[in-house]
Amino acid sequence: MKRNAKPKYRRVLLKLSGEALGGEGGHGISPEVVHDMARQIREVRDLGVEVVIVVGGGNIFRGQAGSERGIERATGDYMGMLATVINALALQDALEKAGVATRVQSAIAMSQVAEPFIRRRAVRHLEKGRVVIFGGGTGNPYFSTDTAAALRANEMGAEVILKATKVDGIYDSDPKKNPKAKRYAQITYSEALLKRLKVMDSTAFSLCMDNKMPIIVFDLFKAHNIQRVVMGEKVGTLVTG
Image: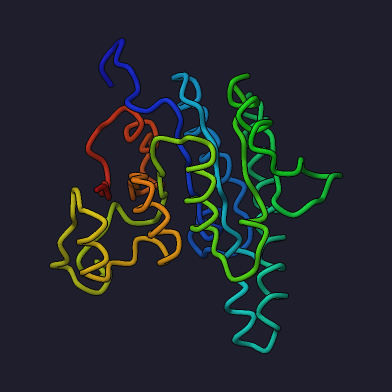
């Protein structure tokens, strides 16, 4: 990183999957992985960038998988939303241990452990230098945490969604199955839809496309990658209009 270089973004939304918190296996919560995430987020916060986070719950419970096994879909989705709050609290704990003031806001009311989601209060936290983690998805069944990320990014006036994954961008086919898979450095929303590239689910993707919200898909598990993305380095794949 060049000395005195300025970050490209002032306010970002970081989307973390629940599986990412589970480490290699993608299940449960890996303290090492969560503390590494906290260190990466602190690096970005130290640059003066305002960070909001939406976290998934797939490492603990996934609503759709539950409904395939006989749990009523809405109930399964609510269970998944509760899982995201567990992950949000784990990440808050790691961030505060790393010296980063953090607030968790939940779309489902649970006043003992998290604030309710209030947009203006969340903005105030950012202005005071705190990181805000949004748990509970959108608060509604049938919507994914990708949709929650697209929704919160627009509500909070984020300039970009940073979608942290286990791969270093978007490919034309599965790089694990096809060694000749081609990675895109940049792609438009229409191209991604036309080629049926699974960037996010369709609801989340159309919300980004309609509101011209850029998405950067990148590998979270490479050291300092969040910082590199925020500084404007060509990391991962940029999806834009």
